[in-house]
Image (cartoon, rainbow, N blue to C red; front, side, top):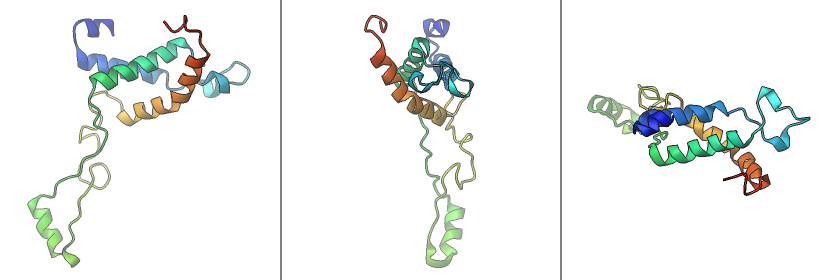
Length: 144
């Protein structure tokens, strides 16, 4: 990661941040861990995990253009003429990855991170409360 940042390889740095964050996807909130063991084989959320998750989110929010919203497919001329012949003349627009001809991967929704962007959004959302509780319980000197 340091080498990618030093040589200004932005795309590689984004990929590395995304995958580093993914390594902590099963970190458990320490307040919910029973008897000191993390649930489902994960590890407890600690300073290293919080640092990595927050750093990845801030870096990717600043340096990466997320395109997880699926665009509508424009109707081409042959399809439009077929739809006009149908009852009521209604045209149907297909969503990419839902009912369209192309899958979400072909549409570029992955965006170059080599993992689904929605996986990252889910990861950050699941850990948001635990990160805030963890940071609230730390001494200010620990957070520097």
